[in-house]
Length: 105
Image (cartoon, rainbow, N blue to C red; front, side, top):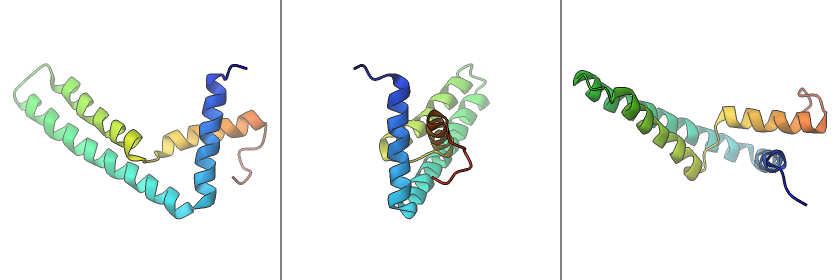
């Protein structure tokens, strides 16, 4: 039987749900780690973007975007959990089970 992409996403949602149930403090720490990476990415993107902006370079926005993208890579490989991704995963899981989104995890 072939596994669809939707089923893979549902499995990822179950994994996130398991992390939340096992240790809420671990879940919170992973969220804080993601926030730190995003903050770091924003600072680096602004600094590099500003350098190119002051030089009136056409590469200002692409360079800023690439450096911010590094923050997303840090989150993916560093083990952080973004609120937006978790919200998507957990709501998708709820909708696939045809349950109310107001029910507790």
